Amino acid sequence: MPDSSANLIIRGGRLIDPASHINTPADLLIEDGQVRRVGRDLNVPRGMPVLEAAGLIVAPGFIDAHVHLRQPGFEHKETIASGTAAAAAGGICAVAAMPNTNPPPDTAQRVEEARRRAAGALVRVYPIGCITTGRLGKSLAPLAELARAGAVAFSDDGDPVEDDELMRRALELGRQLGVPLFPHEEVKALTAGGCMHEGQVSARLGLKGMPGAGEEILIARDIELVRQTGGPLHIAHISTAGTVELVRQAKAEGLPVTCELLTHHFILTDEEVARQGTQAKMSPPLRSGTDVQAMLRGLAEGIIDTIATDHAPHSAEEKSRPLEQAPFGIVGLETAVGLTLTYLVHTGVLDLFQAIEKWTWAPARILRLPGGHLSPGGLGDVTLIDPNKEWTVDAVQFRSKSQNTPFNGYKLKGKAVATVVGGKIVYSELA
Ligand SMILES: [Zn+2]
Image 1: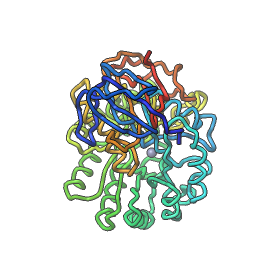
Image 2: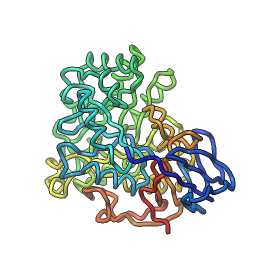
Image 3: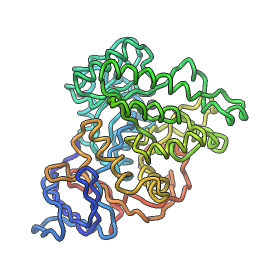
Image 4: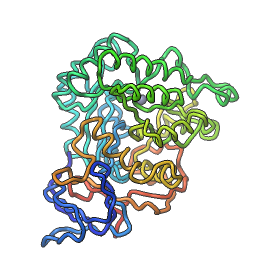
């Protein structure tokens, strides 16, 4: 974790803190890395650094609960240093790191190593532990030990846990430990060889598709297993209209089921693959327009709990391979806030309060993380947003080591202009 003992007063902004139902002009005083006071016209203690926030939104530090930092094992794509610099530049104060590293965090020692490796990082890094040993889907990892070592959730992300009994036992342990299962849901037999959504566009392009059923079948199974076990399920990156309905029903039943949506899945459709090739290749894939509409409705109706990026850096060489062979995934940390403001807030799908909630209090609550709110005693993590700043995405300027984004050249409205972690300014565009 970063050195988080700094002092700072953030003055004159509009404070939006969904956790404490605050949406009002207010100053924020951070002492020793923690929120000390919130209120109008706070006195500035002598020697206290001041961040002037007139015209800006002062939000709890954004949490991206779905990030691939690639270290150890794939440092040519990203490192903890470059990935957390990208997070800071994107207004993200904390990330939960997915475990598809090499080696993966499937033992307590490896989770502890992951925490040590991220100790000096620019933003907070929370490790997600594996569900199965080696992420191979064959035997359960020692989940209780991983949780004790600091794993905030369990996932084999990138791969599903297809074995029903393994997943049932994982959910049982998740309930006992109070740690959510955060699975990647995909029936590999249905998606094998696919490189995009199965639909009219894949048919037109003559490409093997990945049907929505590949996602929905495993989610339906896991909801049934939650019904049996009571284990907490946070479904990673939902992408189909059918999934939204499954989650809606599960919630109506009162099951401990929550879900995550990625920024690209509420904006782009599978048509983007025809336009941008591998820059639009990810798993789950970009779906149909009907699915994107279902995501927007699911957000507005509160069926979808959190927004994340699935920041998945790959080198230019890897993404220059033919569509069938290039790896899945796009980067997202540096476009997350801009895309959220442009496509959800300025379009009226969500108001700012709701959008901020899905990036802060919701992931903090679901993953039981210490941040996500600005009440006194909480972490001094703050994302400062200029909701009306117009800017153009330029991937060459990214802090990330990788530039694989379908949003290059997009004109966006709304940007994180300063990022504060533990009272320390880790990124600022302010004078
Ligand atoms: Zn995934």
